[in-house]
Length: 456
Image (cartoon, rainbow, N blue to C red):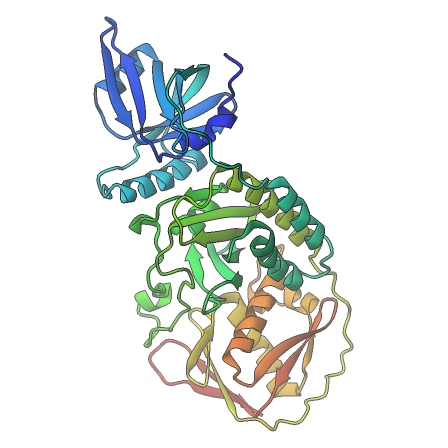
């Protein structure tokens, strides 16, 4: 191979300019076609989008060789890649990443529903040759991203709790990367869903918004543990209105919960989602978007992937060791505010405060436990440890993301301003703040009205 490296040509692999693929049959008869995507895999491999059963495909399977012409959209500089076919992948991280990018390319060219990825054809790069051409002057160099990563890591390293870490991470994206719209979602492994715990740059925070594994760029990134990046938005990966809860669709609830809508941009041009992971275990997703098309390139993906990996390590480090609490209940305090009616829908552990949806799932079960303790004993102080040990909460064995669930609950209560709140009082300890009389009701989904269970 020449001294030209494919890493230095990644701008030519974004799909802005269509590439030309040449193959030949067993008799040497050439066949030339346009190809939607040449995808960078590693310094020695690229992947081509396999979309149609045609002569090109037959030639590849017969001779296992191909030649691709790629062009830089900024300078029009062109390079020829001599390739040797290795295999076709029809699932997995690489396939899903190419599928998302192809959907964006198809949308840009008005070909949604036509361009559908059948497989990712993997090739070894045998040589790279520059094709003489009247190229344009290169654009001014982009600001280097490594200093931005270093600055972010240095700032995040000062965080001593998860709440501060999540908010500071998104602030760093804006200050050091110029990314104004972002969010962090954490994984609920048992339900195979993600829930938003922090966001920045949106009119509404969207804290509590949920996405299922495999849904949109966020869900696919979580499912495959790989970055998913789209340079032109497509309906295939848009988030519509909030999903109807599974229990509602099954007829377990008589009323539809008004769930939390996706807080994203109404017309994004680009989106990127990166796993927050330690090894093969995904604990969350770092998501960013922009109104401009092609905002995030390969270099942005690399830099943000490093930052997301660091976040994963910090989240593990900040899992809190809880302090023991006295068995004595804390003071109930004066209840001078308006009355609060909390209703639990048992089918999905969703909580309604004064008839308005607040939260569901594990976070809902946690709040219900706190309220029941409070209404029965007047107790207001609790520990993370007791939540982990409570079998009624049905936490996973390792209780992953408990702190994130408490952050989610705290932020939702703050947004609602309903007279309830949670405040941290020590490492692994927090206080339930109650401003008015509380009435608890349970709804079992059988169609009967809520049953009062406590009033204080």
